[in-house]
Picture 1 (cartoon, protein in one colour):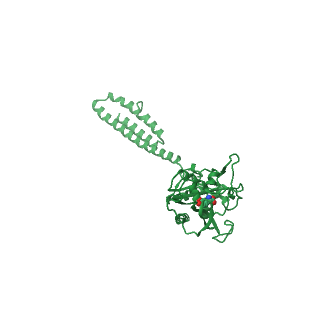
Picture 2 (cartoon, protein in one colour; picture 1 turned 90 degrees about the horizontal axis):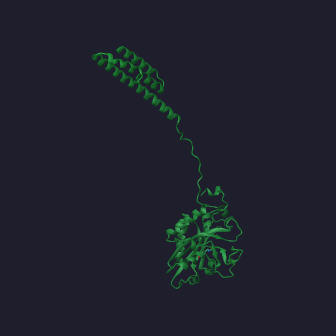
Picture 3 (spheres, protein in one colour; picture 1 turned 60 degrees about the vertical axis):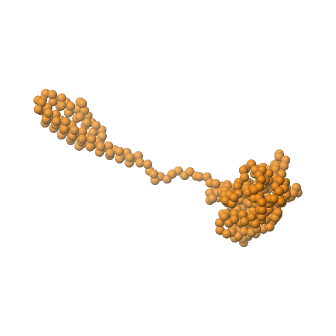
Length: 344
Ligand code: DAH
């Protein structure tokens, strides 16, 4: 019986050595070690042996079974590892493949310039008014009357201002200055605000002028506000906005709602002041109008001009952006040409 056990052991061992796969291993296990396998049928003969033989042959049978289990497991593990490696190799994800291009939108340069200007004024203590105090469809009352603009002023002409056909007295605002009146009607001094927004003018469109554009209105009303405060704030704004020193000039001017009035020009960046198409040969681009709030305007909204004074300004966002980024034509901002917009 010992010899029989050894024979089976040897034949199982050689089968295991020849095995090629996990399923071969399974078959071998079935053939030798299962309940109906060869070992079991021999072990059944144990009961006919003497006690002494039972002990030695039984121990041998157990030893052989254990050895075979060990060999099978070793082989199984090797095949399992090999198959796993092959599978991992086959299913590998190629992370070197480039991703799908998903184009991202960008903030329009007019919006980003507006945001930049707004945050500069915020750093100087101005706050942005709420939009209902600054509507794009305005009445002549706010756009002109309350700003001390005479009834026969040329700016009121249909050649300059868009009137709404079915709404008598309503205009597409030609300036953000009406916001000053709304604010002063709603708030007592001290008032220190800005109001960004779009304005419309019946213009012949050219490199410098479009029939709509964007402004940022500013107003500071308090006790003892002087023209020196106005110059200080605007010079500081220009210094921060342009970074490096840019030639600028304060030029005396006229607006019905300020007295005295001024305009600020910045040297044309396209020609460095030599004169070109963008600045129509002058070497300068006007970027804002400003002045001390006219006493009539203060009085009309019920602010006592004996106690309070103020300055105001209105700046052109497109002009400021053109001067910063050397854009030679205002129309580029509104053509929606992606090649232009993507550069910002
Ligand atoms: N509203 C003027 C314009 O559109 C600009 C302006 C000038 C605004 C003087 C002001 C100001 O607030 O005080 O040309």
